[in-house]
Image (cartoon, rainbow, N blue to C red; front, side):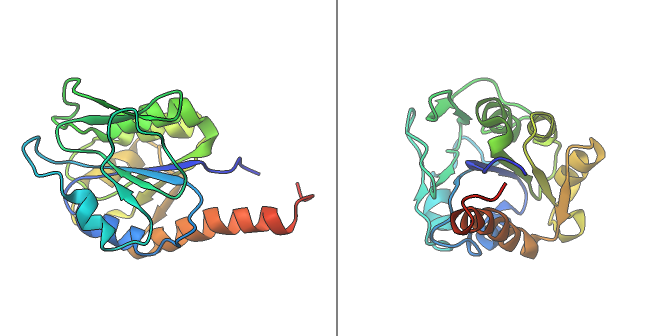
Length: 202
């Protein structure tokens, strides 16, 4: 049996707002893991994505400050113009390192740092997008023992991003967009309930 998931990291580009709103709207109020997500944005964009996504979920959606503590059941949205990383003390680090795949925030940067800190306790999700950002980081999560998931290219507004991760061999599970939220809820909430109801089970 895999270790309990402490964090879910997600990345998207073209079509990301629709993908994230679909997933977050399917998650229960007592979702047990922290969620960190990257949406490719121009550095000059208004920092409104957290506010927009809050309309679709009962989970608190946060535009984090540097060194903000990561808490279960909260959604952290990378701000435009900054890479969002996970530090060893389970806080958010915001950096202005060079863009990756022409993007800052970068999906790969979040995935690499989360994989390093959480190991088998992080689940990586790659969503719709028009470049290859995220495939290297998702593969790192897989190699560290964390589960990995991709939106099916057929259900993506831009299939290049999930296609790149699938072609790299980084993806364990492929789901249409409307199945991803229920899958996360069933996998994480269901497993926690099972452990609570059967504390002696191995």
